[in-house]
Length: 387
Image (cartoon, rainbow, N blue to C red; front, side, top):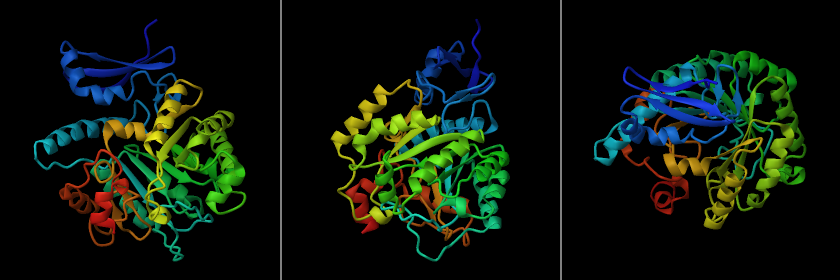
């Protein structure tokens, strides 16, 4: 039986195709020069090989909530961006400054949030600052022109923002839109409206698989149950759902419990990211993952590979890609400040004063944001730029 092929990349000379064999993604290159081409595309292709899709239809492969579906305009743009970034990275290694594309842009549309998370990267200043709908639409126009392929609506809590559905509907087909939420305010009606507007996926943040502990970390009783209800509403609305966990010393031993909960809730993906000493956690430099904790995470990810819920370990991805901050990722605060990422509190400009493309070039020209791992966990960087 001939497999269904999904184009990862193609031009007049060669194509890189993906197909699914017994539930596992495989790739092949169609070209007489396939061995040479495979050498240059191996980093990109290895992201797919021997992985499991989160969803598969007759004509679409959904690899992750973090990636556009294959095929789609957004995915084609992402691959073009990846190819350009490969050239840029090579140029930097040769001492030649070259600009990359901010594939992923997080827009914190509001400061408002009913929670009081102990590790929030963007704690509420109590000013209840919002980015207006016209301003956010202008941001979307600018970053799409820059080549962005994933727009993440963040907060605060985006569900308290009046007009979120209008912003989601405004995002063009060249990019996907996702949203980070605690689940607060994400009712069945809201989930249906966001799905109808074209939202691609929802990342529901969870700090513990245990109700009491999660509510403690979030600073409010009932938020665990709100998260569980939100997950159900989003699945019912046909949205892709990811449980997003910030792992730290206080929850690293709960990985299997997180997984069991993800399976019970029937979500598509379970993502893990390391806690970063920033925001309310900025003075907790020593309370981050230790090498032995990373061993636990890696063993867990390997053991759960191929299970009913896809595990997306961002630390493992960063081992291959390096840190995205200021290189592939851009963050915009409710005040309009433009940061290299949500975790690095260094503004390089403001949307009310400068075009985003100029601010992005300013960040690129520093040459600082070529790190292999999170700079906010780097004492040299913190001593130079933060303290």
